Length: 418
Image 1 (tube, rainbow, N blue to C red):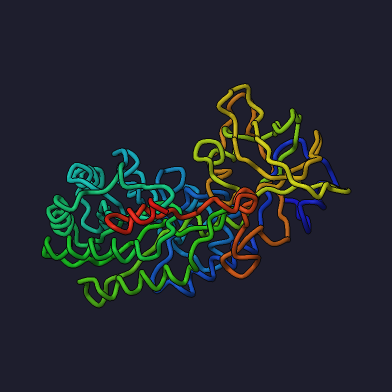
Image 2 (image 1 turned 120 degrees about the vertical axis):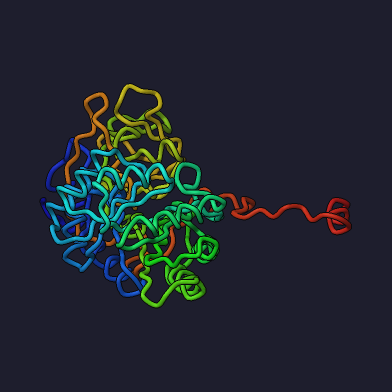
């Protein structure tokens, strides 16, 4: 990979025709060291967030020795880059062939499950192995996440005790519990609440867990999203762990993805055409900007131009390069009023679920990778500012980030009269 001091240096040296993933390994290294220093347990990187080889290599070099994977290709990726790593197959639903290959070909011993059918499948596909680490995924009730992840996986609390007991009896290895509070969790206490629910399920089952895996969900900074300090999340988890009914040797795990890698990469795109407030770019919803299109995720943007830039900002819409009308990102994205064809834009905080989501639809999707040495647009690890102001909120002082319901009773009547 070529290395540049800043994205502007790349544009000055050559005008790339393809989108460029601008990666910052040093930023990722800082995040990896932070999690290992502040989390009182094992850190398993969630490979799905960004499976780029440079990410795996950087994390391994910084001491991360465990990886949460969801498929055989992810297992193979980690095995090639870090042969000695602990690989945990944490997808709750796996094919028999994937389970068998993971166990017999790659030496994987840690498997997640959320039903008795998956437990039976794991035991059958591993020929009745007794050295398994069986991690039961629980469905927990939490609030405060941008993406709720409780609808697809997780055993309900009514059925959890029976499954926990079955998993305990099925192995001579470790039995544990896991859960996911939801992606981009903005409420640290959600972890402590989930751990309390997990503890009650274990007590009802009459078993001790060897592993408590609090999953992922740790947030990153985006425009209009300034999460609490990550230290608050660690404090909540550690308090929750202290209150759980576990034995002294119980291990504590976490699976950070977004918070580890979001700051470490951005995306450089080219403006192919401007139509009024619409900018047509060489990447879009079928590329690295999936979340911007389908979840209206607020990514920060800035103009990368070697020359004068208009001081006033204007709201823009983005369109990707494919011929599909779904390839659109409404924004608004605030950029200088004089953006024109041939300009380059940097879209920040794209290290998580950016390049990992790209497809080759319509023949697009091919992307370059270059290392840059500047700071991210925002950082939870002291590398940049702690928030990204939202121009839309700044121009509309009447807009409220948090709205409270109208008081009931006499207080509500008094307010209505006013």
